[in-house]
Image (cartoon, rainbow, N blue to C red):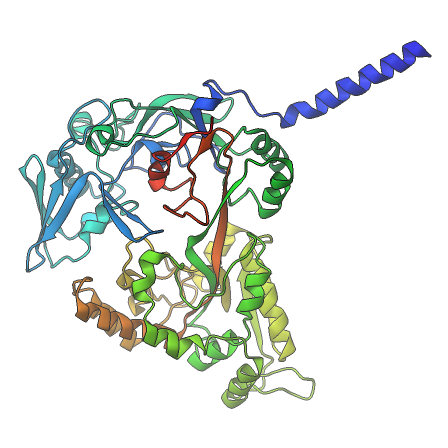
Length: 573
């Protein structure tokens, strides 16, 4: 009996150890206390290439985009500050047919070669000479590009240009490559591996079995001399996130510093807070607001007043309180996030005029529908003026997508006033197909990022220009995110005027306000709530993370601007 008892205890211990093994964090090839570990949701398939000119030429989430590659300048969207990084500035000619680009002296590639005007000229010329490469759309208006000297670029245009400086900003479209490495190579085949870049980290290794990349701090990093900054962690480990139970266990024990907020849910964060004190929260708005878009080419959502009637059924306050992806969100009227850098586009006149109109008011919705002839029958169901049953197809991705939550809400509200809201749930690929061909009445998703990154209202309004609208059933690839197919001659005219104006002029602001007023009047899309992510960090090994009370930089670990956070990190002990 005693032997049996000992055997049973031993078996129980062994079984517990066996159960525990799958949720133990993997051992890393470099010292954990010297590494910053972050996650992606992407399975790595490209392990030996950093070529921005071809499809599948780089691996998203590998770290190359985040800590090796750099851009000429950045916008800190949390503070509104322009960060002139590899350049000192730019200047357009009075007629806007030339741009002078001033390169900062002292910037070097990670092999020690100076970063100069010749690299920028080479990159732009490569795109101009090879129209089949990715990125050629960004040089369509370039007539010529030359190096005035080693640190000055002259870019001349076919037509007046007002926004080319954004092409060389973070995620602007033109990634500068090292002339001394790429010259004489076929840009379609050259691997650029290990990558020669200007960023603070150099390639160290990758492990296909563990599905991770490792980058090592460049001790000769140019910004260390020029700006006096260098990242705290010696290594950066980029790994694909494991299943949620393992991910949570890893975070609790300090196996990962920055999980991906798309998949490290609010419930997981709350569970972690109960198990460890090493939890730092940095809730922040995504680059888009969440809402829905009308199919403006399909009856009855083609009717402006009908669109306004339906928006009165959206209870933004309720949706913000029941937001599933964070502790809280906020109702919004703006089709962009509440970033400080974007405050200048939130005109007081527009807020006063439309702020009170974009409210939950079912009675007002019913009054408009009655006026339009969409009246209730004896059965309480509304019909079109021709007597046909009124129903709307609400297109969304599956739960737990936030769009599904909002589609369910609107469907319930529609039912209360006699309209059938048919929720059509499809996978992300099919969602895109149906949106692009106009097979929906109302589509639920994030709205467009066109304002956010360039911090300019023109690209946003331009996505709603009539030239993008294709007939129903015909595939549409350009325009706003959900292909509203809006047609408004007044809005087109304002947008075309803005295209020829200096965004920094006071006159531009006047036309921008008129354009935004027309957009709200037409209401092709309806903003609902801020899309909040809670970026969570572990401070077991590193301190200095941004927080809700000290949001010194956008906290998202997948952004290329995350290097400015790495510069702030210090060992926790």
